[in-house]
Length: 163
Image 1 (tube, rainbow, N blue to C red):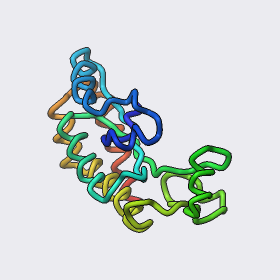
Image 2: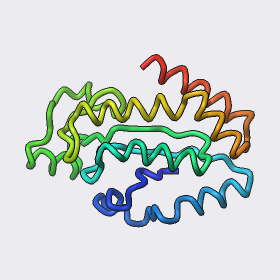
Image 3: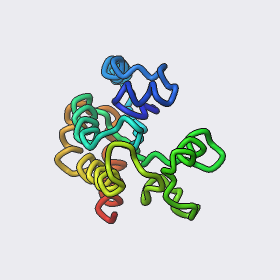
Image 4: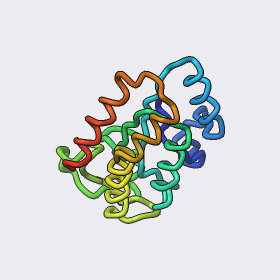
């Protein structure tokens, strides 16, 4: 599921108001009730994101028992409205297109945190979400489709440990 963010302000700012954060928990519960596991797609770095977004996101994901998540750093790809806006605002930091990967590099100046805080928060969420403690808590809470969610969590844990 492309949740994108647990901040409604972030969703509204990128015209994704159809992503109703207030409904996320109920939707996840309904999906789980049908025996279906949830993999959430989350993006960090929206203009309304502060350093608290990392802790808040982890808390939401763990409380709802979401089985897996893919985390990304907001990346303003060339030719997109986001890129044009950030370029006009003087917030594009590099034109080294190899760094436009969404996982390793931050290529723009975030509005409410430093580049280092965004990168550190992104790494923290990956490491913490795929820690053995978090995996056990989430999968115990919602033991749906363990045959594929457990190995996937362990694979992500290995990858996040390698950096």
